[in-house]
Length: 107
Length: 236
Ligand SMILES: [Fe+2]
Image (tube, rainbow over all chains, first blue to last red; front, side, top):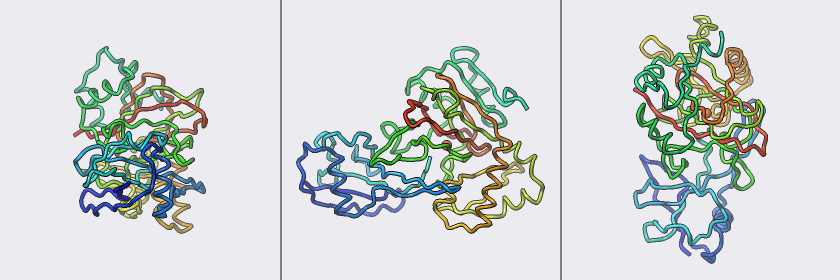
C-alpha cells in the first residue's frame, strides 16, 4: 500500500510529504506498519534526553492525518489498531502519517 | 511561609468568581486551587474557556487542548518525560516554543498513592528575594539554548521579572561545559530550597502561572494509575 509520511510538522515552512510503498495487509496492526517504515527509512524509534546525569530514551510519537487541513493530525495511541481503521487523508487518498522523532516539548 | 498563604482555594459550585480567578492569575503571586471539580474533559475545557485561551496541540486528546499526563510507553520507551514515572525537576512548560503559554491548569483525576507524584512549585517572587542584584543581572544576561531558541532564564518586562527554565530541554539540546552544568546544579538546588509541595487530591484543579513560577513533580511508581489532565492557556 502507498503511505504518505512526514517527519516534521512545520507550520511556517512545510516540506512536502514523502511517499513510500509498503507491502502489508491492511488487516495488520498500525504498529507492524510503523516498524516496517522504521526499517526502510532508518528513522530511529527513539531519541535521548539527558539532564543532571540522567539519560532517558524517549519513543517517537506517531500521528495520523485526521482531516483534510494540512495540520490536522491526531496521535496514534494504540499500535495494535488495524491499519484499515485509519482514515486515508493523504494527497492522493493514501494513509498519511507523521512520525515525530524530535524530543521537543519534553513535557 | 505557610503553603496556605500561597493558595487561594475555592470549591466548585460554591463562591466561584471567574473575574476573581482571572485576577489572581494576572497577579501571579498565588496558586488557585478548586476542589471538587467535575472529572470530565468537557467541564474542564469549558471552565478554561471562561478564563483564558487554551492552546491546541496535535498530541492532545482529539488534537484539542487537553493532555493526559499518565504513564505511557510506545516501542518500550516513554513518549515524553510527562508520560514517564520519573521525577520531573522544577521547570517551565514549553520552554522551547516560539511563544510560551503563561498559564497551566492541572486537574487531578487519579492521584498516585501516598506521597508519590506530589507536585512541586516555586514562585519567582520568592526566588528573587534570595538573589543579589548581580545574580539577577547574570540570569538576565546569559543566554541558554532551549532547543531552537536562545533565551535567558530571567527577563525583565515592565519592571517585573519572568522566568524560563527547563533543565531537560536545556541540557538535552546543547553541549554544556563543566561550569555550566555546575551553574545548573546550583540553580536547581536554589530553586528546590524555595519550593514547596502540594499533593493533589482527586477532583482538585490547580491553576498557576507558567512564566512566574516553576513546577515539577516527584517520582511515581511505574505501575501507578495516576492521571492528571492538563490544559495550557493564556490569560491576558
Ligand atoms: Fe510541566
